[in-house]
Length: 195
Ligand SMILES: [Zn+2]
Image (cartoon, rainbow, N blue to C red; front, side, top):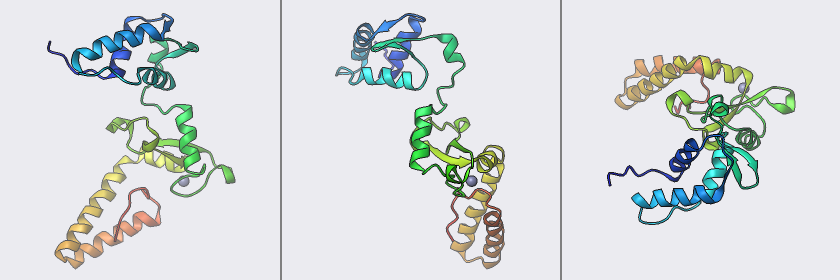
């Protein structure tokens, strides 16, 4: 059998996609996933149930009642799987003390906060707590709209490091001035420049 080694998660999605708008109890899903999984893996899948719950938390499945889930394609269309869930956002805020990781403004002083993808979704960043950070509205806006400046800052950091390694004082000073200007205006403070 030319089996692609499907993951537990992929198999669960396949099952639910084949049974749209049905109230599905966990027995048949787990049995089917186990059967499929064993075609390409030597040992049975573990934690199938946990993976189903995770798909619910991510908005892919609707929980009908305890142990019963439903896949509604029209509801999922409006839901991006790479969006952070409310629960994930709350975790991120809590971890960051409800403050912008760049400037420190936050709920304590009346600033609105946002959960940002550190690696943007457009670059493959996942909806995971480790890929999330708390930003205030201003820094969230800048990060979203001034992606080009990130490329700029990274380029000057690379150039700075290169000039340093070959002892090119003029280029070093040039880069230093530019990077200090980035710092003065807090442009891309999340990208660290080590002198
Ligand atoms: Zn901020």
